[in-house]
Image 1 (cartoon, one colour):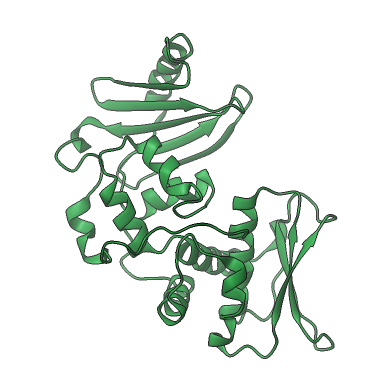
Image 2 (cartoon, one colour; image 1 turned 90 degrees about the vertical axis):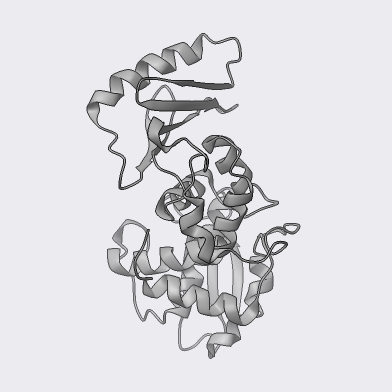
Length: 273
């Protein structure tokens, strides 16, 4: 877990405290609240059909314009659009004066805006509470539930990372298909070493031949293994060490209790962005 909050996380928490949004966050609604940061110009969201695939959103500011514009890639899926627009909100809230987009974005500035977007879309208190009340689920089912549009409406990748970064899950998440690996994230106290690659490949072969090809779970001498296949052909795998299974079922709930909000603050109906 983070011992101190980054500038992006802190700024998002300030905004959440001021405007008290419902979740999943309605980003269009949030536009009306950006004046809480005393911005000089209103912000407009504009879809764009001509952005390269590597760019999901971009902030346009110019002294001669009456508005600030966030243009977003209309070809991208809704979860990516939501995170990318929240990322651009972060640049505004953190008063970043100049930055590049895409692969040329300064890593430090990008991280601040990413931290802002992550906290804005998945506030640690609400996210931890939602994970805690669903602690009976296996890690993949939990990630799938938290990322849907009735909860936080985020990408599977962002949701898996949040579970790990907040110390709610010990282990690793891997997403791939037959051609390539899309992501691999692990907690600090879990090493996805090469020795485990052979075990994973063996278990995946078992998964392909199981009677239920969409969902699979098993255990080895030191690992619990979960896998789920999606209609796209992608497979999400979750690995966790055996000694993490117990009364708290994957999650260090007692350590997180200080962050819990009161019941009833977590989920409402979703909106367009």
